Length: 244
Image 1 (cartoon, rainbow, N blue to C red):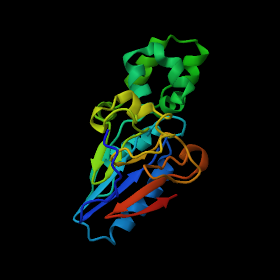
Image 2 (image 1 turned 45 degrees about the vertical axis):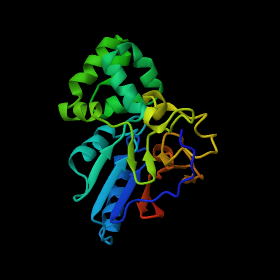
Image 3 (image 1 turned 90 degrees about the vertical axis):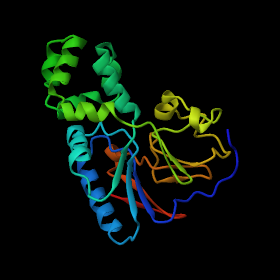
């Protein structure tokens, strides 16, 4: 891995906002997007980009509303990138293999299914099979949402930054990272003090306030528990934060 120190920046004329883990909080997403839209109007950047770091679903009350907003109702004039989080991986895994039901339920999947209109109380009351749960969810999932989940990106590089959901493995080159690490890793990524070659911007691990280290910036501020959804604003070598 390239261990050279980097001074992260975006190319001239570019403005980027990276949004942390939303987890079903459509209400907070609405508020933060309004802030971003207003803030971006003051910039003369030629290229404006929105990057969402994954974990759109689970735990919060309106995963369906979050995904619909991301698909159809984002501010105009931005290039848009949607990264895959471990919770989207759990959802997709359940659609492929209903025997992963318990794992998804332990991680907030019931709230997601309920937001799509699935009768989870009835399924639970009648001790429905995992296949019945999967079939009920699959039937309730709009095709546009299924396509959204299937097309999520694993990472995005921009200037001196790399955007991922969870992090990177320090023992592998950035171009050779495994999907499992990009969406699930904590240690050894969080404990690594050396450079990664780019400044890594990530979510996945909740923090009370944005965590700025010499090699990474964590912006998962636990929206579904704290009411704080955070965006990192990058322009040139400057960075600031917007927050609900």
